[in-house]
Image (cartoon, rainbow, N blue to C red; front, side):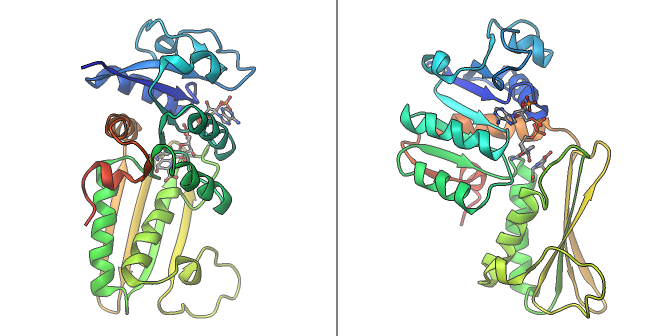
Length: 270
Ligand SMILES: NC(=O)C1=CN([C@@H]2O[C@H](COP(=O)(O)OP(=O)(O)OC[C@H]3O[C@@H](n4cnc5c(N)ncnc54)[C@H](OP(=O)(O)O)[C@@H]3O)[C@@H](O)[C@H]2O)C=CC1
Ligand SMILES: O=C(O)C1=N[C@H](C(=O)O)C[C@H](O)C1
């Protein structure tokens, strides 16, 4: 079988470099193209050298059009505005996508669902196995304790992260709200400052830490009087996300169209 050819956009980024490495560790895939922002000083340099895995003979490009014939699936971990440009290209050229970027507004999420009527997309706020299992555990816990427990989601990330709460924290909120048949927007408390009054029941509080080089840590708290459950995930290497995204690229290659999650890839739905 031919190898699946992957394009990585945002190649110089923290995730971009890990993704280039991950394509070298997986079987059945190869790096077809690597993209950086127009004007980047890294255009023309070798993607393998950039990621510290030796020369791969894949020069970093700033034009998807120039490399359109070199890839089957595009992996995007960039910023929402960049993702939406790449999405338009993939839709026009009928290429599958794996999207790990977080921080989309409603219009951005809508554009992704619209495109998925024509192309296959895996869109997930977190590509680690552990977080996707944790989402299942949260649904189970919410069904037992969600009515009466105080639910808090606490996330911690490195100082460079630009969006808050993290996409994963929001996905955790959605999983809990879904299990409770709540609309997250009506139950979420994103900020507390000043004289807040007592905690309202049946709300989901979010708290954000940004510090140093924390890769990604998430905890959900279900607290009652006399006991509490804490369900946590700690990522210690971005390779866990990169490996998951490459696995998703292999999986999505066999889909014609539709919007999928990492839980679909891992067969954790249902
Ligand atoms: N789903 C998951 O499992 C995970 C998701 N993420 C998400 O992935 C995204 C990227 O994270 P991270 O790698 O740490 O971020 P970085 O800032 O390290 O990398 C982002 C990359 O995208 C490029 N980029 C940004 N804006 C544009 C643009 N307008 N056009 C083209 N390229 C652009 C940057 O280029 P330049 O440097 O030139 O600005 C950079 O190469 C974030 O949204 C993060 O939350 C991260 C880890 C796991
Ligand atoms: O920006 C990051 O680094 C991460 N972002 C994702 C998120 O917003 O949930 C996933 C991971 O925790 C790392």
